Length: 431
Ligand SMILES: Cc1ncc(COP(=O)(O)O)c(C=O)c1O
Image (tube, rainbow, N blue to C red; front, side):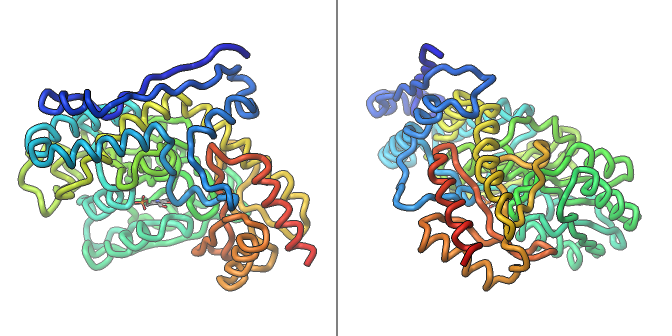
C-alpha cells in the first residue's frame, strides 16, 4: 500500500456570478487526503478506515451504534455547510432571489448523475418521508375497489400513508409479514403469495433496506414480479443508497424515495425522489404548485422556503461519498456488521434478525434476546446496554414476530466499540 488519494473540496456548489465574490472570500476549500488502498482488502484496511474515521468529530464517550437515524457530516462537509450558511445569511435575498434557483438546479443535476437518473427524473425534498409521501399519496392510477399492499417491515409513516389511501382513493389495504428468519427464497415467496392472494392489487410499497431489522430485499425481482401482474411499486431507498453500491436502474422501479442525510452525510433536511421519465403523469402535481409546468417534476413538490445552505452543501457530501466510493462504504459497513454478528451468534440467547446471505443485509442488523419481544423487554435491554456498557442501540417495533434492538455502525465505528457491544450482550445473557 502506498500513496495518497487527494480530493480538493469546493465548499459550495456552482459558484454563480452574483455569489462568486463572497464565495471566493469565504472558501478556504479543504483538501481531503486518504491513504490509497488495495480494493481487494478494503474492508479491513486499518490505515484507510482510521483516516476516514478521523474525518468525523465524534463523541466517543459512548459507542454510538445508532447511526441509522441520521448520518453526521464529515468535517469538510460540515465546514462547507457552515460557510454556505454564513454566505446565504450575509447575501440574504440578493442570493435567494437571484442565484439560488440556478444553484438548486445544479445540485439536482449532480444528485441525478450520482444516482444514475436523468435530471428531469429527480426532485429535491427535505428527506425520504417527504419524498415518499409525494409518491404514495400522489399516485393517481388507483380506482375504488383496487388494493394496495405493504409489509410489517416497511417504515411506519409510509404504512400510514398507504393506510390513508383507503378513505382517499377507496382502496383496500392489504398487509402481510415478511418471514422470519428470512431467506431470499422465503421473501420472494411471501411477495408472490400476497400478490397472488390480492388480484386487485395495483400498488405495492417496498423497502430496499429495512429500518427495523436491516433486511435487504431482492427489490428488482419483486418489482418485476409485481409489474408482470400490473402492480406498480414505490420503493423506499432511505437507508440503502449511500450504504449500498447500486444506482436507480438496478432497482427496476419507477417511483423511488431517497435520503441524503443518512448514508450520504449531507446536512439534515435533504432527500429526493425519482420518477421515471415516462411515469410523471401518474403522480399528481402538488396541490400547492401552479408555478412549474405540469411536465416538470418540480411541480410534484412545493416545499416553500427551504434551507438554502443544506441544499448547497449536497455536492460536498457527494464529493466525499464519491471519493470513498459506495463500493468501499458497503464493504466496510458490511464488515463491521459481520464483526459483531459473528460473535453474537455464538451467544445462545441472542437471535440475529438478518441472514448472513451477503445479498440480504448491509451494515444494519437487529437482534433480540430469545423470547423477549415486548416494548418493555427491549427498552430495558437498550437502557442496560447504554448505561452499563456505554453502547447506544435503538429499540425497533412493528415486526410481526416481536420487538428488537437495532445496531447501525458508521464508517467511523471501531472494532473495539463493537467488542463493547458483544461484551454487553455476553453480560446480559449470563445475568
Ligand atoms: C426505511 C426508512 N424510510 C424512510 C425514512 C424517513 O426518512 P426521513 O426521516 O429522513 O425523512 C426512514 C428514516 O429513518 C427510514 O428508515
